[in-house]
Amino acid sequence: MAAVLEIRNLHVSVDGNPILKGVDLTVGQGETHALMGPNGSGKSTLAYTLMGHPSYEVTDGQITFDGIDLLELEADERSRLGLFLAFQYPVAISGVTLANCLRHAVNSRRKANNPDDRGMPIPEFRRMLKEKMDFLQMNHDFAGRYLNEGFSGGEKKRAEILQMAALEPKIAVLDETDSGLDIDALRIVSEGVNKLSGPTLGVLVITHYQRILNYIKPSHVHIMLNGQIVEEGGPDLALHLEEHGYDWLRERESGVVAA
Image 1: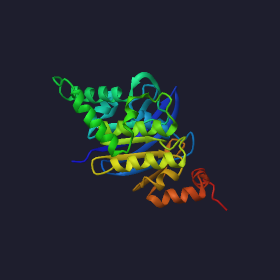
Image 2: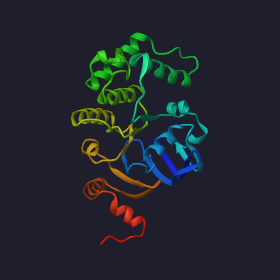
Image 3: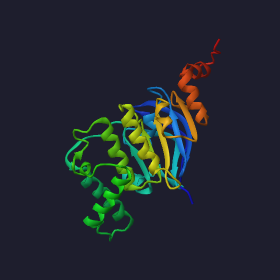
C-alpha cells in the first residue's frame, strides 16, 4: 500500500508569531506536487515543520505519515519512516566526507529497524554508492570530498539528491532546490530527481518560480499566501502564475476585484 503524507488544519508559530494558518495538503507515494508562493508565505516553514525542527511550534492541526502521527516523533524518527528533506541552504561540515556521512545515515536507519544489525559492510556500501552515483551520472571522486565544503550551489544540491538516492525515502520534500542554480545546474539536478521519481517516491517541490517545473513535471500545484494554501490545480496553474504573478491572488484574497 502506498504511503501518504497528510497535513490537516496545520497552524505553526515561530517565536510566538503565527506563520502557518490552517494548511491542508496530501501527498502520496508516486505523486509529484509543487508548492509555490512568494517570499514569506510560509513554504519553508512547512518544510521544516514536517521534519520536526524544534523552532517551529505546532499550535493546532495534525500531520500523519503512513497513518502515524508525525508530531509525536523526533526528526530522525521521521526520516526512518521514509520522509526526506532537501535543504534550501545545505550546511558544510568540514572533516566529514560525503561518503562517510551517507554510510552512517544508512547504518543508523538499518540499526533502528533491527537493533542487531551491525551495519552495511564497507565493500557493499561502496558498491551501492557507486551504483547510485553512476545512476545520477556523478563523478566517484565527489564522495571523497568534505560534505558541502567548497561546493558550488549546483554541487550542494546534487549532494542532496545523492543522499535522497541512498536513503530511498517514500516522500521527499525539496525546499527551493532551484535556489541559486544556473540553468545548467538546474537541469542536472532536476534530471537526478526525475530518475529517482516513480511509484515508490512521492515528491513535494517547494519553489518560487515555474522554471524548475519545466523539468520536474508536477501533477498537482498548490499556491500558498500568508500561511494558507489559497489555490490548487494542475500544471496549467503554474504557467498561469508565471505569466500573471501573485497579484491576482493577493487581490482576490483581500476582496479586491481586479479591473
